Length: 304
Figure: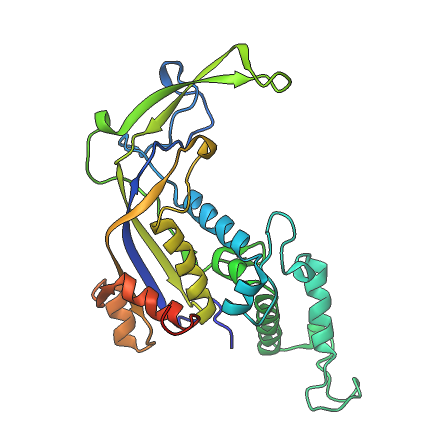
């Protein structure tokens, strides 16, 4: 059985710290106070925020891109569909419409339950004639079929058909002072024809200063082996400064890297005591990096 959401099979919590290496702009849409054209997202108490949804989007985009490398996909996820670009060609399309899912159920109802090929002798019959247990079983089979149709990135981050397995709370600095957090820059509009500054088009945008530190927490449940590898590949790219957050990244904004010692706690056993200890926050934490080496070592040649 695939690792769906109906039962708890494993749980991960990864904790680390991200430091801004260049200014960051993740803006709000409305015009800010005092005429500011583009303020950054803030916590209610005024601290800057990196929305967890923005970070998930950056991780997903990165993994979708590198996942187009067929050799990499065959290394990490040799079975199942190829990695999709969800905004262009999402996987699971055969189940996207309700009528398609209903058609799948009807096909399942026509399957003889006793191996007899005669649909009038042993078939499940019409939906209304099924028991609640039989309906639930067909729906479980449908969920399993949908899951198998998804690429590993859609299983991790979710799509229209399946809720993802990863959650990232908003990142908010715990130390510092507002006078150290923010700066303002001027920008000018560019004429698309002349590629020069457009007369009279000037705007201000707010930045979070380099050096601000954001604690990071990544939670995951029911990870398959290949999903562990894809998640760690994305987090390592983030930790090593390969990914950029927010807007205006072409100007060098949004560079981050992981600092300090990252930690991981894993609940791999489904025993009741292990589950209780995990959700009480009392399970054992480990160094993150050796676990990365252990997981990724399954896919690497000896000595690498």
